[in-house]
Amino acid sequence: MSKDESQRKKKESIVDLSRFVDKKIRVKFQGGREACGVLKGYDALLNLVLDNCVEYLKDPENPSVVSEETRPLGLIVARGTAITVVAPSDGMEQIENPFAQASDD
Image 1 (cartoon, rainbow, N blue to C red):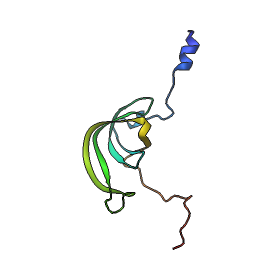
Image 2 (cartoon, rainbow, N blue to C red):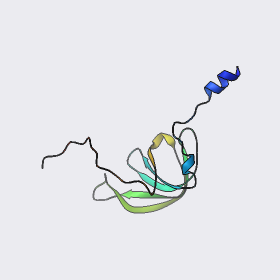
Image 3 (tube, rainbow, N blue to C red):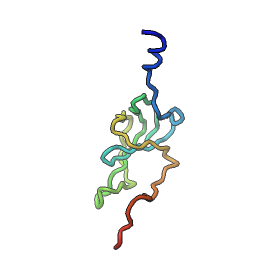
């Protein structure tokens, strides 16, 4: 195998999480679960290691809404295949979907 072939086979991640290491991030998973913790490490497949992690629980009245109630998880490894959103904890806010159809109530 030549040097060019070995360099070509090395895959790089599209997402650069290096600026978030040792900072608090919020992660959304497939299925609607959300967690927040300090990013300690990651790999090219977006598997994340989060420390001091807490999970945001869903509202018992409306399971599609995430409440501010939390439960501590501690140190976790989050599989990249289940992650849909990674965002800084302090700069994240939910916005209205501009593509949602307005309901006529």
